[in-house]
Image (tube, rainbow, N blue to C red; front, side):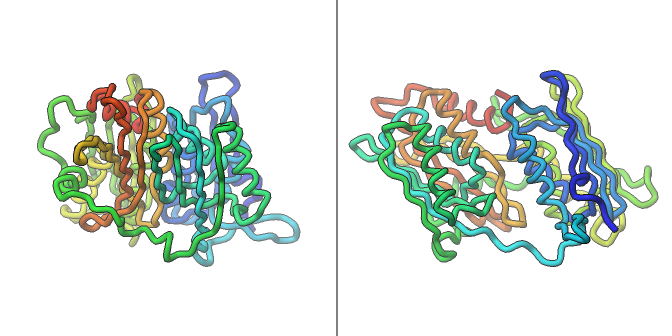
Length: 412
């Protein structure tokens, strides 16, 4: 026996604007399920304001209180959440859940070649269309020609797995045409092979000074004056309050994807949450209590393991992304980097937030690239944006960096 398919995820929408909607998930457990669920919620642009998690290692019960918007596609959200829970099979016409038998096949990658006359905010509008259509950007190369034309190359995957059909390709083209109008010159989509899409190592060179500063995995002794991050992060671990679990308590300032950042860190360490509670108090003050065990089902008693996990959690909460403005010869370049999950998934909506920040500042993008780089023992997704300075950079460099950081952290 199992649980009925429709009861796996139940969404109760808020009756009044501003009140949280409630997402209840009741399904078999699996390692990293909380991370996968939080990632989907982040993909839909929702903010988790409260959460409760409990599991016995085989079955889990999760409740999220989230703030959405009038544009939130709740039906599609439920479908995606159900899809990430352990897979279902049909028995006597009724769907029940069972354990995963094998990992899913990697999605096909397609190349979207889009040519258009340039204008301010164009890249964000195109990125918004791809997000709306559930097309995930794996790599991108954007360039501007001297005659004010833009050639965008997007390597994308389709959450709906329909991009091989002409109907889906026409849908993408129609959406892009609607947002660009007569400025669109051409739009072509074709499937590409793994030899083209392999991006574990970035082909572009990153200066050593940048890698040392941006990708430092140690907690800095002190943050630079005027730093855009907050030092108010506390991570403590206690083995005295539970006979079978280690209690992790986190106190910090909220940011976009906070719970995702915590869950992905625990997933990468192969840590299981038996019980957890998350809540946001006044002034974005967050409190998280997690009762955890290792993969062997035991609490964490080794001091070195405790220190390693505590330091990584503190770092990921304090600096979930890295943002820097650097000189590239006579030009100015923005670099944004985020760690890639061990499963190979990158952080959702990063490019969307970067391009939105540029649009809000009325600042152009001359070229942009997304690549993956192995720095130390971790893989990073690196966004490189060459700023269109035209007759001169009208917006101060520190203002661009600050706006991008605020957008990525949800502090705008």
